[in-house]
Length: 113
Image (tube, rainbow, N blue to C red; front, side):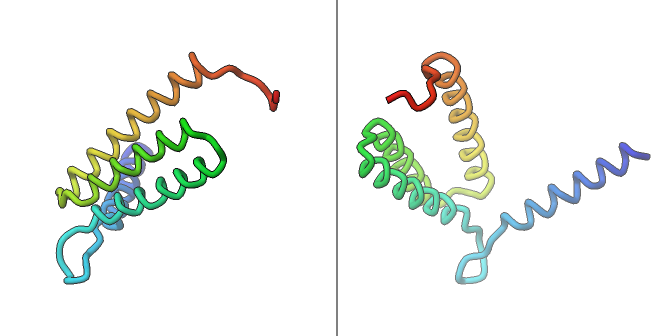
């Protein structure tokens, strides 16, 4: 009984998430996941400018590469499924890189100037 209810609730959540991701464009048809990648490009561009203004060149360069990636993907007019696959692949690569950096490269310190 409890497992059946859990599966039912999980299906409901997945259905509603999928329903909220299927946005319509101005003409009333099609998907607009490409806009979400352009929004990601905008925000990573803002981070690029802020990192550059803060004299953090490595972070600014990394953010600039992400901005170029998101902007290029945003204009490809792929299917919604492909955009989701690309985004989850990006998240996977990011988490692996972040875990590697924080485990093996980062030197722990507390505000040592």
